[in-house]
Length: 181
Length: 418
Image (cartoon, rainbow over all chains, first blue to last red; front, side, top):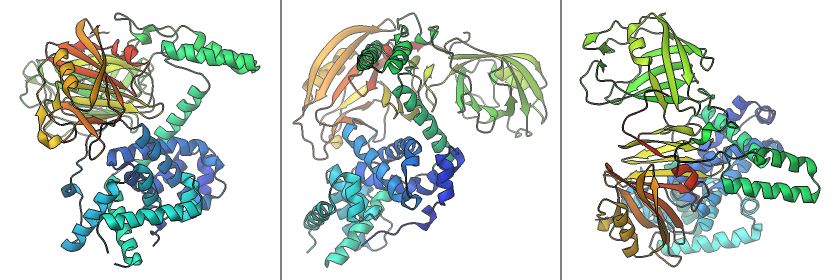
């Protein structure tokens, strides 16, 4: 299952070119279109909304500096998500403290009206939160960003077959943790 | 459940979890901040240290020498030139920005600035209040100024401005103020501003950029003159560019100098963190930190810490999972202080990986601070008559920590003159 790619995130190639040329407003249009997508991925990696926002904001100066190295504007979204994901991974590694966010299951919000499914999802979210950051990165890139194994591999420095085998083990572990038979 | 259905369920759960990070944002502000940060980062990569610590200057000089040895003479000369100047000396009586090599912090740098002044007893804003603080917000985004008062009045005397930073500034009332806006001086109500009212002021900033003084040249609106014509202290407790300013997140307020940068601020009860990502720097300050009975389990409650630095050190000495590395007697702004270096043991293990350390006594929600195993804290605990105050510069230990903490000055009242 591949996650949807929001069409609202499509940015004309000219906008990218304008930003590369130094147009801050063009850059702002890119920010507007992709900031949320990047924050979502960072949230799963960091496990904390504040950190996720920090990581996303930390990604933008890098994007500004390196946008000129993006050879194919069609690949803007996965490139941005990769930059943000790497910032999130670094932030988790050097992370020391921040304001607490409750880690209680009760605070894992759900807008699902089906109580059974809500409970099941809450259990699964809790299991994701307990994963190491590197595993959460795979989950974020696969299920939130919708990356395929090749794209994930480029981001985290693994071969696509390595990504597939790690993801398979990870999903099996999650199934076991939430007792899904 | 089939693999396909579980995959669907996993995707749904992951995306719901991911949505917890979604918040409103200002794309233009983020873009502009990113451009500024990228440029600063570029500058720092070329040895253009704006506020190097002594150790940083030594390190940079060493790099420059190494480059000379390697034959890159031009780059080496640049590194030596920029880092070879005496770095600002920090002493208890001298502000680092007083250095001849440091330009004054500009009043408006393309981002909003907020200035503070205590509300005089003879000035009121239409409602009775005890001691209150006024905040003059200068928004370079829409070129407006307005005054908020901590007693609850906001957006008073909203005006456009022009000429800021040139020594003279003109304020112009744009819209009719709401009927509720009532400025009174010595008990007598002053006439409100009307659209088109102009006020011309001299504006001067202190050498360190901390004090802005506005004096009236001419003013159509008496109420605006009564409020604006005074000295204002730059606030560091709002997003900004660092430098010297006031943090008034708790009583006592204090002034401090942070390296020039691009900071955002997190505030909660008796705690404030001013932080930036490039380069990573956090300045944390707390009043009356209290501990936890169990660093793995907040729900077991607080560990009450008596006032004073020694009690705080004693708390960490008995706290499971932590090791006190050193304590050092010193003073901060003439007050007794203890520098405590403590680390969470590398083998400490809590179910969620976090070891909870403290939260301010005034905190009534869940905000608390923690570390991960193996992480070191370098804490400056100050015994102030109004409470136990604690400061930290992260990442710790940090060559900037002494430089920053040595600039802390506790304030009984905000400065009224440069």
